[in-house]
Image (cartoon, each protein chain N blue to C red):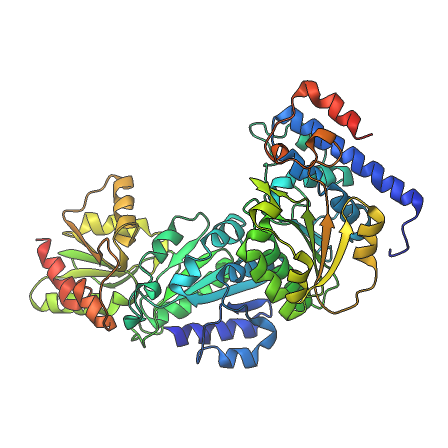
Length: 275
Length: 305
């Protein structure tokens, strides 16, 4: 770990991300489920975590010493599921029947519903408090495992997110790492129009966090930000600039694809756009 | 009740290093010794109840057993979604302690009066709901929640409530606790009204009316057998609670009876009617208004006949 990313490894991560995005589109079109844009934007963050940064073993999903990741933006669950499937946490049979009666995976993650799902989310603003609790448990046990929490920008409207941010900064919970999928778009508008989060880095810094700003689709930047030595003993947040709907041109940067369904007849063209 | 809770919690923390106490910035003159004794098992999260429950859930996800404390209103309502999703839905060992019975904070007003806390906790799946009637019950139920290892809510009063039970009386979560027997009526009492119910029964006995009195410290899981027996074996039921009628303990009793197809010979409940209690006064001022007194309970029993 922590060796610099080779160009070969970057290509592998990019290919993994492309596979996962294709899987998201396929499952979304088969199931008629929405939140496609929200599932596509954090894929590179999830790939960096699950295929490079996190200390995990899909064959031991309950290993007490594993790193934990909570997808706090639960509506992006399809991105998490496709990542966990590709990483080997569960077989393709789960997602093959996604959205059907008597199946396992809900549109928002449910703790314990399948291996690798560390917490229930779906209501926004719950992930960072739970992530802080996990981090404090590891600290109490003097255990080396870390907790990662993937947040949406929209859920930074929630007061509970900032309650946890303030306490984590105060407690210097440096084993807690937040990644904000800053795709600039939320449920009913652009974040700058709904509630402008800027100056966003300043907000986190003022609450006692070490902030690293990255292109959320650039593996070198993401991995470097997560793995390079920490400058402080503070919790770390990555402000990851992302594109909602990343990978499919007509889904990018539009609120529509928070809700729209991908018709089966449009699937092949959408997947082809991934390159 | 509150000092007994802290004493029991302190014992548990000494026995199990995975026991945590989290508070939402409350506990002045209550938790100081615990803080000194177990600094690594204690955290004041600040005035932030949503975070209180979320952090408690996160700790529990990693195997900790967490007591989360605040005033009963704040511990249940500000953070209801966290309790529902993070604790109840995930079925985690988080034990919520709501301080204060309905009028414990007397002159503070309705912001501090838990009128509906037990009812809104009772409707949550996985959640045990406890309203002990004396310090002995508090000690036993604190330990029982921990042993059960699943979500629980317990409301504790805080104004020096008397000990009712002998030290060797067993208290079991989910099991009603009879304290007087009689055939003329049953008083099903929950929470700190227990001494009043006993006093009412004793005064009625002197008049030749013999009541069964049952301490219903567990709202959920409800001891339906005790409720049905009261309906079948005695001349009527009076429920007594410091809580709103709607969704209250009396409602739970009526649901159990209706589900079982059993009708008591007579039924009435003493509770707080559908309103935010108006005005200002001490605890007894409000309790007398709603007949939550020994005399009020005795009168209610007589009204059954």
